[in-house]
Image (tube, rainbow, N blue to C red; front, top):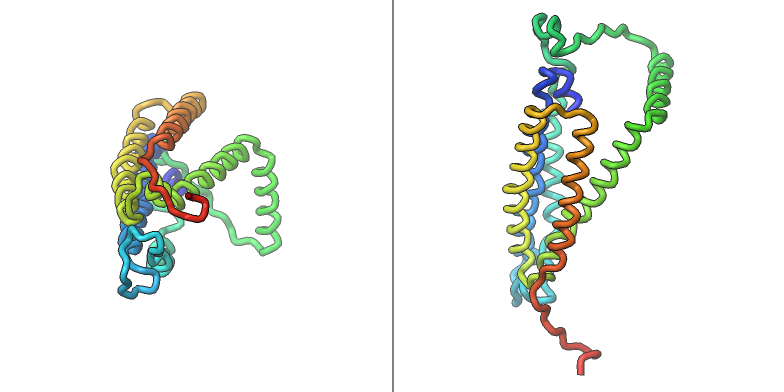
Length: 232
């Protein structure tokens, strides 16, 4: 996002950031889709005398690490080819749409180290940056748990195969999260996003999100009775 902000018209940063964020959510959607397919394969990739509804069924979960790990390595190479800074027109610089970066002379390793330490010290003394970073950390932790166990949650609550739960979540991610992020980019382009407006919108959306998840957890189908030593 910093790369985008430094190289385009600042008034369009929210719009293009929305496109980038919306595109990034196709990753989890594709992962859920392929996860549903991998869940239909037995863990040893052998033909077994049971179906996906059998309680003994274990899907080939390990295929995800091989497939997505390889894809991450392949896609990392194009990212290394990005220019450090895009070419900027003199007109945009004159109008203040973008800033021309000063030419930085080569310095020794010790000078770079001193500048880095000085920069890090300024960062840790910035309460706004630290609070925003903490918010992002907790946000990623909460969504990480959701993405990691949501398929299992859907499977258990609605008594459906794990593969079907993955397919449902893939469709939900692609239709809701991507469109919401894209529309968010349009909103930030049309509305003056002052700090008060930004945090007001964040508070409102997170409040709605918490209420939605609380109501969603209350929905479930009748659970089957498992016959065991405690059932007479």
